Image (cartoon, rainbow, N blue to C red; front, side, top):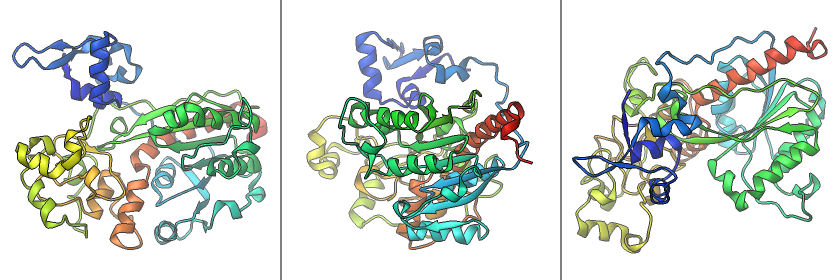
Length: 415
């Protein structure tokens, strides 16, 4: 185990920006030490004990195993299902999807083509009722979009959320009355509308009979995903249930881009060939000059100014711009378009964006999971997805919770 970690490494592990860590250093909240030879800011391993999420740095290096076997057939209703990242992961963990709702046609086609036996409902959730599933579903999940609410009073109520998609998620939970509901979203929900949006969501779950747990940020790199992606997980437990929900334990090993695209522990073969986008000529000429692991600041000063234009003179690192990935680090978070200027994700060796199958590998989709629609539609579906391996680890936590519910509460057991 290393004794010193760079500012960049600690920022990645904590899911913070390097600028935030610099502020912590200047304020004394987390004071860095200077590496004698380079004078770079580094952190002693002992300093990082204050962060619960970095506990793996101090454990004995035995492998984490979150896997658990379902004692019964547990059922899931998934809303806002997308291209199936969460659904595949829950399936891998032993949960059965009884229905999946998705409004996007090509994402729904992807679900149907890969799992003909799934009940895929392609429609706007606002047009649907799931009252017929009351008492028949153990879990309702949903990656609802993040929308601000209108606040009529001091405490946001269920009715006040009408017109938002979280209202629809909560409505369906209220109709179905599952043992557990699981919402997932981007990390940005934490601070959306100064945190009021998330607090409003939790107050709504409380109003409809669910005890909301403290939100949890799961960093994909700790759950067998070769990507620096984060998802916010919001759990609600039905109030008549007194069983603790435990989030999955982080794994000690972090996988890199090489693990995603080459044969190894994650995949038995190299990534299959597939279609992909291309950079326009001017962008390709710029990115050809960026080294693996580098970005626009690795260009000559003249080219930096030419490429960044007005952005060159603004604050912030903008480390995603003109970014070439490295084989020896996890990928940055994938977006819905691999070639747009703010979020380039250039291949380590070739001057091109990742292909569709490379995108899918980084999100840990199986190679036999095909995506419907145009190349741009496929990128969009993959970029919006929950990484499959992360979903599997979360699925194990759900199964463990349900096993305990059924074990300790005879009334919940099915004949």
